[in-house]
Image 1 (tube, rainbow, N blue to C red):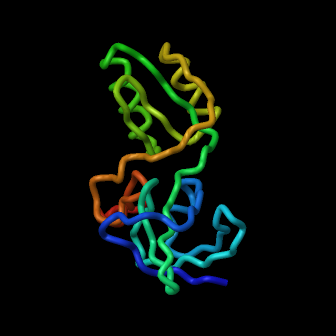
Image 2: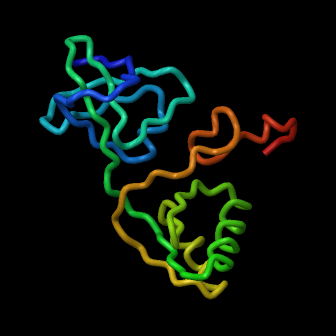
Length: 155
């Protein structure tokens, strides 16, 4: 098994691709398979989140590019920024990892959250899409959240 532990700071031509859901891209250690089927072990420094387009350097010199996998997400679309702001407030209040785009918000699909937002009058679409949530404002908050321990309170 190929073990990869180095990130490339500058992009280069990729030799292989590794397609990962957000859940794995948040981990510092995991096993996966390259698009061609080769098994790899990834060992990175804690707190790093891999994003689509990031690249890793294998010990044999190959450049492995990370691709964000399609996964089941819920997407809200609105031309009214106030509605999107309300939705972002309610989702943030629940510490939900959230991807923000022009006229839309996206989170990992959760039917309870979908129902809450529909109750606020928003249309929710469940779809397959890549998920690249905000990194978060706190150190180590790469999953779109943070630990209450960072503020001296308990969860």
